[in-house]
Image 1 (cartoon, rainbow, N blue to C red):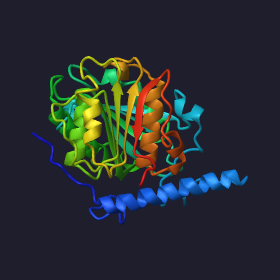
Image 2 (image 1 turned 120 degrees about the vertical axis):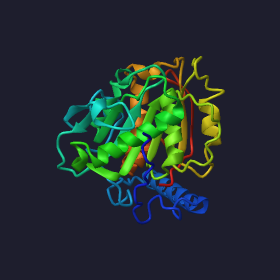
Image 3 (image 1 turned 45 degrees about the vertical axis):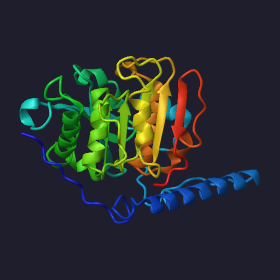
Image 4 (image 1 turned 135 degrees about the horizontal axis):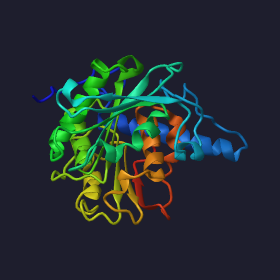
Length: 317
């Protein structure tokens, strides 16, 4: 039984059909550029402009002000717990593990579902779940119905997992159902891209060394960070990650990061670069927390960890 595709009701002024028009995105990006320029002028004058919750334009900051060390840490400021969901108790995906912050003192959290790659189970992405949860997200690391499911099916399963999280899970009262995202590795990454087309109300997508036969993602309206690997021979960046990124609309908040010297399977083991940029991307677009803009814009320099990076700076949202 295939899960139904349900679009969460948009909040006024956020990701509605009007707010998503290219002209509006260009205006928001121009406004962001003016803020960055003003910040530089103030610094040059010996003053500073510190982002606050108000500066986030109604954002949802969770946790203390970030630093380069805090986003690279193996664990963030939130204590976490986990619960297992049996495949026998759900429809549309293969069950999984939910990681979540134990305290709701700061309010509800955004949520993200993670899908593994072809022939892999959720154990291949288990390192990322608690790492993201400890930064202030509810994370559902799922198994697919079968390990040979194709990207389109994995996209539907990611959405089914998000629906379960907000409607039926034991942690649903901890989640803001309007702030959801998807992550996937390989075919799971291709599935994450599929999910952005099926549900444009998603706040963020992070395809990791994605594989998909579809090359055109110009209909996407979801801020997307694509992570490729320089030495990927399974989903080579020239035929997968790079053309996927290039096909995303010019007016969309998007980024492409290429891991220096890495293989297709880099996302299957703890990786500080993947974690740091995933945290920053989710914080910036799921939480709308401008404090994390500094780690994305201006684009970081290439070097030992990153062989290429492109970003639609400054971000409009």
